[in-house]
Amino acid sequence: MTFFVHPDLVRGTLREGFRIGQSLREGLPRAIFWMFLVAEVHPFADGNGRVARLLMNAELTAVDQSRVMIPLPYRDDYFASLRALRYNNNATPLRRMIDRAQRWSSAIDWTDRGGVLDQLRRTNALVTPDEAKSLNLRLLDP
Image (tube, helix red, strand yellow):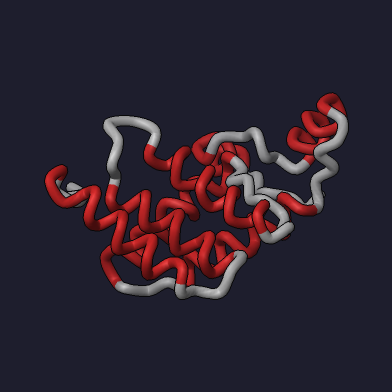
């Protein structure tokens, strides 16, 4: 069972978190921090992960770095890395996972919708974690 920030403390916790985040180096370090902050504070009834990843990608876009897409078969790794930081104060898995996802995302040619879908299929990015396990598939580089 996961406990998030008490609703009465959400606004202040986010305000302080964003103040701390401003002191971090721009780009990936700050993006990962802000993504984790929103995911941990959990300020919304639904969509916290999407908002957290949107904030991460907004930071990356602001400094002209490649955005991060978490491919479906990588979802379990993403959640495990969040838990490693939440419960064990170990940021290494999250940093490594996001770095890998960013490198993977940056290798996709996002300019052609049909081409993107083909690349996502070829790399197994659209296969659910359960399907990937049962079919012994892994995320491939583009």
